[in-house]
Length: 121
Image (cartoon, rainbow, N blue to C red; front, side, top):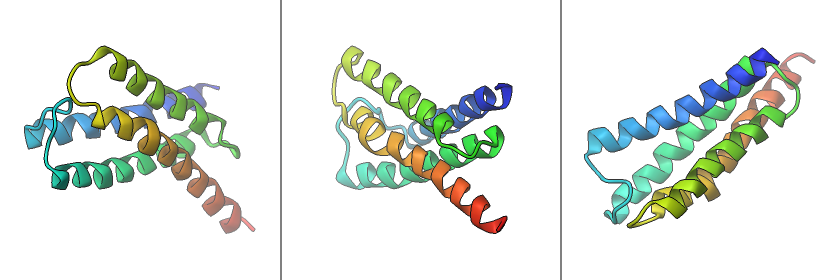
């Protein structure tokens, strides 16, 4: 159980820290409109790190099911939904987190499970 909790915490931390770094170094406010190019870059960047967060969650938790990834999904989407209702300005980052990045984190876990099940046969 400790491994599963730790896996979710570290998986979420990967997602959050990578997001913070993206917006800090780009000096773009995530709650304001920005260029389509930067939105596209955020989509790709966020997708990669969401996949990694789901993969690392599974790596640490060492489960053979997606329960920990669903928990990660709920946490990611939950905080993004909370932010969506509490923040002013543009909501493009929250919508990406809810509808793209959260589901991609589940795919990262699924990839890890499928990779390890087939490699052990």
